[in-house]
Image: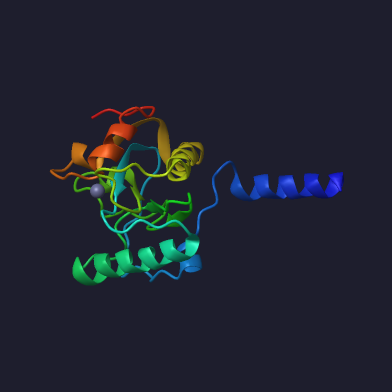
Length: 183
Ligand SMILES: [Zn+2]
């Protein structure tokens, strides 16, 4: 029993390399990008968003949201792919958007030097769940540990770099207290 537990734990640690589980695009059934620009490493910024649409609280309902958001970004906005690098649901599920190695379309002038993370839902007058907040914090730590984002990164809300209400007043007030935030 103990040996099985140790084997299991070491397998989990090896697989995740200190990073949270991320539901890959192929796992949620996302479409392939129609074009792609490689994203660098040691990026200086992390930009926080909300999708300003429906919230979701299960892998199943968030998968539906993911497909809908991707279709909107590709069909209506004419983008190559879903705009964000990652999206997070109310149950703390993390979904791969453009991922770690492709430039996103989420914040003009910042796309090529940031990772864009979006909370699925609208957080103008309500807060994301603790699970979602913890998932985003863990994704940020992962971004640093894998070298995609520099350890001295700056955390910003979308509204700090573009004229927008994103990520919503309530969520914006929350991330203002997170480490390395600077408007
Ligand atoms: Zn935004």
